[in-house]
Length: 166
Length: 82
Image 1 (tube, rainbow over the protein chains, first blue to last red):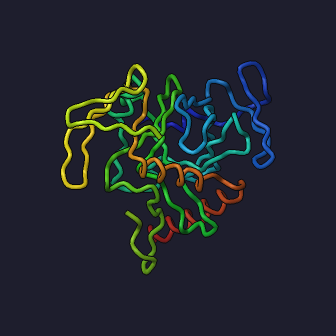
Image 2: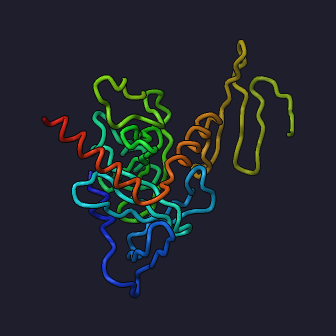
Image 3: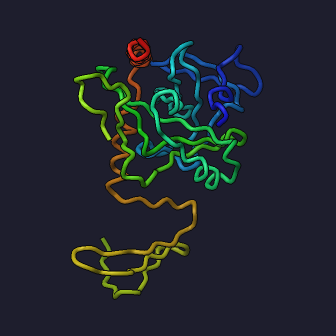
């Protein structure tokens, strides 16, 4: 799998031709290249009307990335490549490639991370990963009908802290 | 809400492209066959709701929450290796 983050890159330089500026009350001002923009043509469940997002690196050593919305600058998520946070997760590359009419090798996969007030209880949504065609930048949130995959899978399992959610 | 009665095997058409067919009725369950273009997404209601709720609670309130998560993850990863 090609690293989606590698393709998504980071914001560089001042806003210029082919770049967009996101000005957010919460997340500051960020310039992104227009070819980094992900298009969710089906939107994101629960957030009707938003279509354009950009994925940016968090900071060195962090497995997390920002997913910032260009249509609503105060809307942001934490995402990660699943292999960086969980074991034994098989991203739906074939299904994604079929839906996005591309090759499985050109699919990037992210999972949305839910960070509660106690970050040790953070979870990832394995049932509904985000898949991206790294060439066209068309993106979808898939819904996997696999009873073993939860919407809130615990990332950090400590001894005595209970088993991770299914 | 529009309410229709159908027999097994009969269909309902929604718009020009979507059909719903009653395939089987057994016990308290109904099996439906749905045919729709690929761009129409079909979900079981409870799964749609679960993802909607999770997406909404995943919305980041501020940049600091990600910093806290990265720190928690880093400590956990060090513990696991040690």
